[in-house]
Image (cartoon, rainbow, N blue to C red):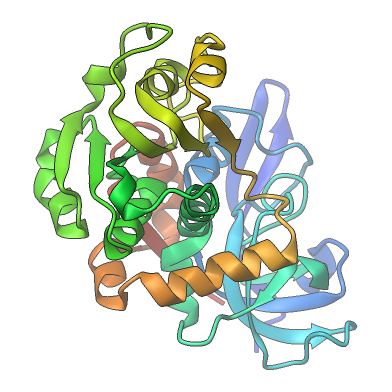
Length: 330
């Protein structure tokens, strides 16, 4: 077994950051009580920001990017895990302030790890990844609000992307009528194959929102923010709810209090990074129960570790469909 392993490393420069392919050893890893041989990772929107430096996602240098991974425990100083255990990691600042999944090995805190859910391989777990796990948290928020399939249509923005595609598939599997929003009309057949009942163009949500518009959606999953989220809120029915989990359009929210105080609309903020263990386990169990493995495979593409820098740029341009999995070399 080689003493070194391949990795991407984000390093600080005078004008921002650089991304370099390199070789690391165990001594290069950050502190933690569990060392994992990383088998698979994935590419999320936040990873694209980290790889390109388009937004200051990486806040400690040098750092291995990659906000999630799945693999096998090599060593553990924590009684929760033993060598040979299969584990998954999402969030906790990994890939932001603690080195992450784009390396052959990772050392992290045991509290950040979840045992690989029964019924999933490590590859499938990364096909779900942070995006799918976040999508499930959104679905759970709508369910916990009391919204059922009989209550009306559920809108999903960014439906052809990572979060949106899995949210669409899971909601459809649960019996909801899903309306998918996309700026890519060529993805219509793909979205219908996931279970979407209808497709609406992203441009319908681009203009400045009215305080209140016609009531259309019993609930929604939004990955965009900005005018899109403001319009979704203004169109949500009385007592409905929106689960917001992204800022692909904007971090701003140019709306008024009208949806909240005149219609009783609830806006749920979905924090997938610091979610407690019980909520994480519930989300992963929901994925296993409600996401068809064949459908997951159909929306997943396997990409090369070598291509991650280019793919990071593509995902920010909206050029990535569904989910990407990356086999991590050793």
